[in-house]
Amino acid sequence: MTAENAGAETQTDATMTIREMCDAFGVTPRTLRFYESKELIFPIRDGQKRLFTRRDRARLKLILRGKRFGFSLEEIRQLLDLYDEDDQQRTQIMRAHELAQKRLAEMERERAELDAAITELREQIAWGEQMLDSMNRTAAE
Figure 1 (cartoon, rainbow, N blue to C red):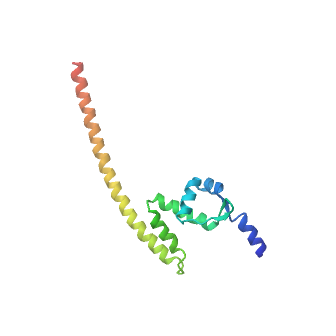
Figure 2: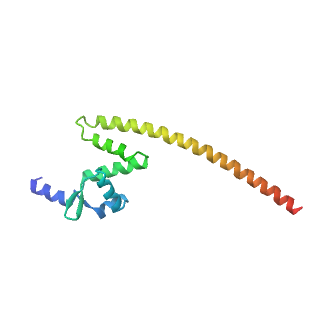
């Protein structure tokens, strides 16, 4: 590939507009601008236009995955920043593994609390149904 072709690829195939990013990732322009303001993604500015590179797309994919798992933006930033370490991503993978284990433990604790609340609510509903049935039988007599 010549330098001339590489430049052409950078401006077409390798970049996406804000609308294309929104469509591809199911986010709003406001979301992209927010992540840009937090310095999590770094689109190329062409006047008022923002052009998102492959790196921005990869970073956004990781941001959205991290948010889905409940990581804070600061935790996500730290993981993204570790990508630039010169150790074949070893540090990034180790830190991501550490955070993932911690988050999984939190999610499992939250699920246990939710399961207990669901069980208790079912018991309350069953009690309420019994009370209503009893009241209906008394009223019918």
